[in-house]
Image (cartoon, helix red, strand yellow):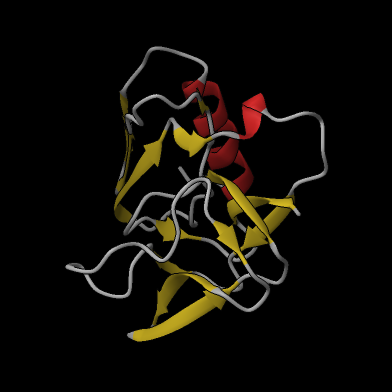
Length: 159
């Protein structure tokens, strides 16, 4: 049994609408495990966000799919938000090193060209810069989470 990327995304979307926290499918040599993990953000509203998944690999495929993301966008008037997307497949990092503070936090104002995160790809640390000036209203990816090309990492309210 093989799954297409679109089938996996549809499965994750359906699972996010349920109380199921873990699902494992096995067929022949393929084992697919999907686990939800919850991030709690004090005094901030949250929304549901399904992360993109990579294509399945024969043997074992495991993905931690966050069900909540940090956001303050729900309380904003209907304004066009600017999305910062991943320019590559890799691992998302909020800070330059494990013992250092994050580049940005919710509510921070960033200027065009400011570093907002790092995407590690093939052992190279790629600094991702904001292409616009704005206030961070959503951070959709957890630290050390795998990301896909084009995946929305965060949103800015233009100022």
